Amino acid sequence: MEPLKKAKTIGGADYVFLCNMSYRHVIAAHKLIMDEKGEVIFLSKENDSNGCIGTVDISYPSAPLCMIW
Image (tube, rainbow, N blue to C red; front, side, top):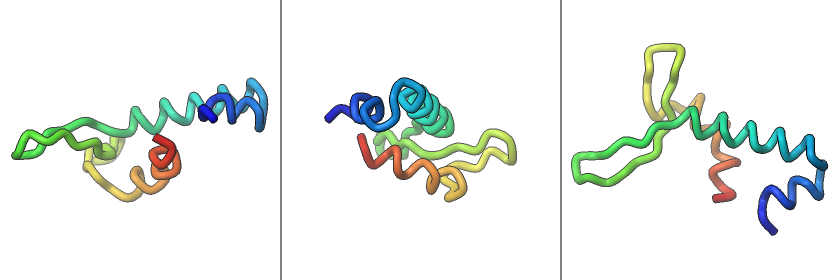
């Protein structure tokens, strides 16, 4: 079942809205970069601190959403 249809079945329209906002938040917390070989990498990126990339404090909470892709 499509994730948003499943979300609507579970919690209705308000839950679908919450899932959409969570998805947008996770995507916004990441950056697409390119490594030395030209491979595209999707890593977490901190916005407010020193701008570190690939840190666990952003990647770990994002993991459940990334698992449904």
